[in-house]
Length: 160
Image (tube, rainbow, N blue to C red; front, side, top):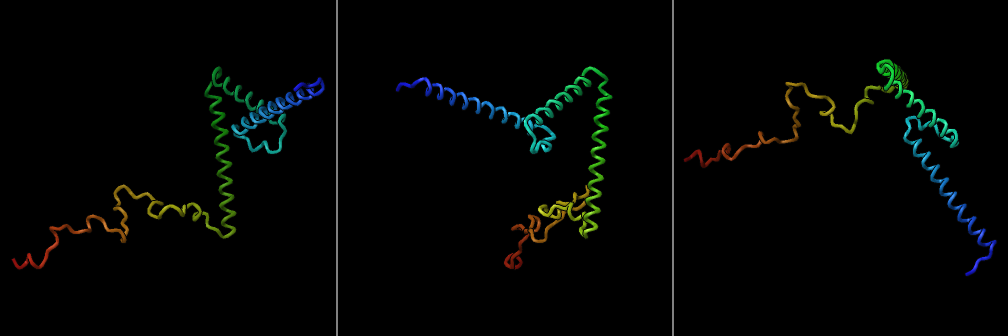
């Protein structure tokens, strides 16, 4: 089959457009994969690719600066700052927990009952003390409760 110049040019254009479309799709997929690796991926809902790349770029630069500070400067100061930030974050989370507990109490729900997992048996909820007796289930017969053959005394043995 012989193609004329216009159909050959159209075919070439269609092939080029398909290749370009798949290249763009691959780039977008890689950007989304990078976003999913970041700790702040929830920020990227309904953001453009440019905004995502700018945020990724600033995050990478921030990581580079922190790494340089750890490698070349006084490492204790950077670690101390990071520890302080983490402590503040933990403190904020604890305040949120307290506010949620107060909200539950005001709704008449005991927050203590929510800490107990209903899928775990009661005997596993609390650790036994070091020298406490093991908890026994009255419905389970242990090997100590089953008499041996030597312990069974029949009436024939008494007569002999």
